[in-house]
Amino acid sequence: MARTVASLVFTRTAGERRPCIPDGVASIRALAQVNGFTATLTQDAGAFTTTNLAKFRAMVFLNTAGVVFNPSQQAAFESHVTAGGGYVGVHAAAETEPDWALYQDLVGAKVASTV
Image 1 (tube, rainbow, N blue to C red):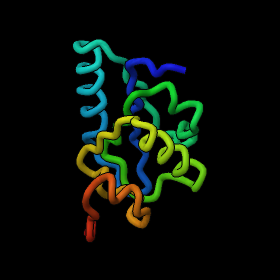
Image 2: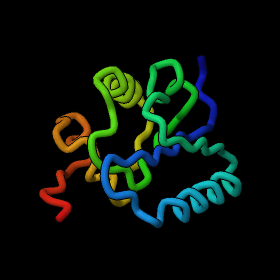
Image 3: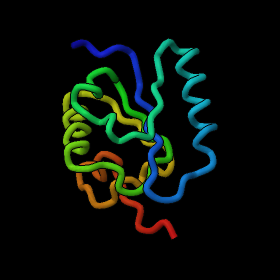
């Protein structure tokens, strides 16, 4: 199945939910409209299955935070990225999955503390 020009915008938090998330969603949707791609919004980690992620060329983690995935969701994320799917982490996304080495390697840093 060929991937359409689409992005999955993920905003789940397992901690502080930043009040700027709706503004970020609006900005991404405006960029999508101007640049001809779709932006599907979800807070549901259940969207992270191999079948569902195949619909998207990129995943945007918009101010996500904390542990947001179970092991099967992590496996689907990993499969998508290693197959060439894009990942964009915005701001607090660096606070996501702090103990998952693959995610921290992808982000390129680990937040030492959010206090």
